[in-house]
Amino acid sequence: MTVKGMIFNIAHYAVHDGPGIRTTVFLKGCPARCLWCCSPQSQSFAAERSLSGARIFGRELTAEELFAEVRRDAPFWRRSGGGVTLSGGEVMAQPDFAAVFLDLCRAHNVHTAIESCLFASLETATRIAERTDFIQFDLKAMEPSLHRRLTLLGNENILENAAALLRSDKPVLVRFPLIPGLNDTEENLRATGLFLEGARAGVSLEILRYHRMGVGLYEELGRRYPLPDVEPPTDYEYARAKEILSDYKIRVL
Picture 1 (cartoon, rainbow, N blue to C red):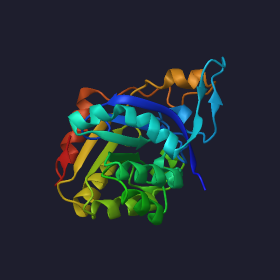
Picture 2 (picture 1 turned 60 degrees about the horizontal axis):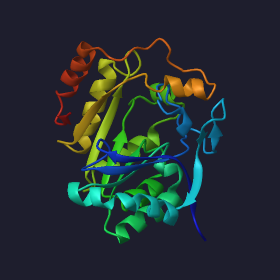
Picture 3 (picture 1 turned 120 degrees about the vertical axis):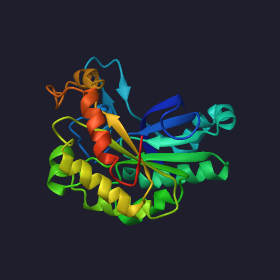
Picture 4 (picture 1 turned 60 degrees about the vertical axis):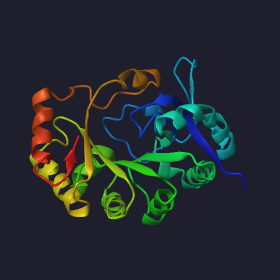
């Protein structure tokens, strides 16, 4: 049976989504509702129209159709050591589509990466990870009740999947979104550093600065932005987070 997936964007010549120059495919649909999400059009699994009707977010296609689109960028991948990255939304929320597409890439010797929040069963996370050359995932909050308040999801399975990936031989980059007043407490930062150090000493952790670039998209979809009063972290707040995390045997970027 042909497997179809829902995507909402393809970014060509991406340089922050894995090694080399990449083509990043944004899958549509995510189980989380992170308060700071900058891509509200990524959350629903269905296609959506902007309020004016001028833009449609979301289109369905087969893995073969998607591969035919992205492979046009192959010359950039070959020259830079890049490839294709599946992002979201959430990759693991469309596991059958993602698995077939990743297998297609592997069959054509295309380097693959994923960006994920890891909210999935361990079986699904393992299934996708074993088909992927490079994995980037977020750790947003360590304490379950805080994680649920910030994303509407618990994090027990997220931490289980993160530990399994960190203990594997897969190349991994962990990302921590720094949201002032929400997840930047010393307690949460130290819990994050301790967890990573225990699972894979020396792992790379990238601190991502919260930003407000998605506000216009909420307006376009007729939705209220959840954090109207939160400002991006100051240089001091960013440096403080980096200093705390640097106490642990991890590589803070």
